[in-house]
Amino acid sequence: MAKASDAEEEYFARENAERLRKLAGEQKKALADTEREKLRQLHQMRCPKCGMELKEIGVRGVQVDRCFSCNGTWLDAGELEKLGVGQKEGSVLASILRVFGGGAAKK
Image 1 (cartoon, rainbow, N blue to C red):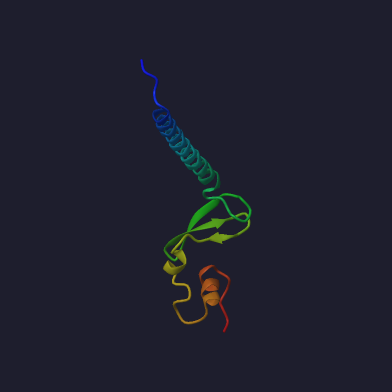
Image 2 (cartoon, rainbow, N blue to C red; image 1 turned 120 degrees about the horizontal axis):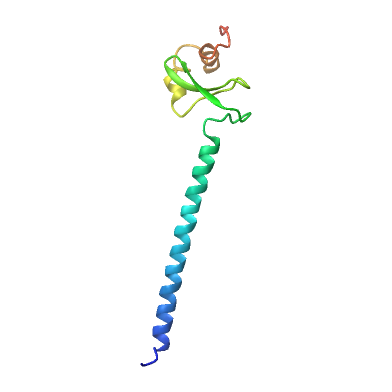
C-alpha cells in the first residue's frame, strides 16, 4: 500500500478538524438550547420582583400576570395596548391608575 502524500494527509487533517469543529458547535448549541429551556421553566410565571408565583387575572378582558405576594402586576407584549392605556383622554399614568385600581385619577 502506497503512503499518502503530504498534501493528501493535510487535506484529510483539515477535513477531520472541520468535522470536529462543526460537531463541537452543534453540541454547544444543543447545550445552550437545553440550558435556555431549563431557565425558562425555572422562571416562567415567577414574579421578576420577588420570585413568587404569578397568577393570571382578567383585567378589562385581558389576562395579565399578578403577584399576590408583592402586589406587582406584569404585562406581556401588547397587553398595555389591549387595555387601551393612554388612548383615551388624560395621561398615560391616569389611565394606568384607572385600570389597576389606583383610585380615581384626579386632573
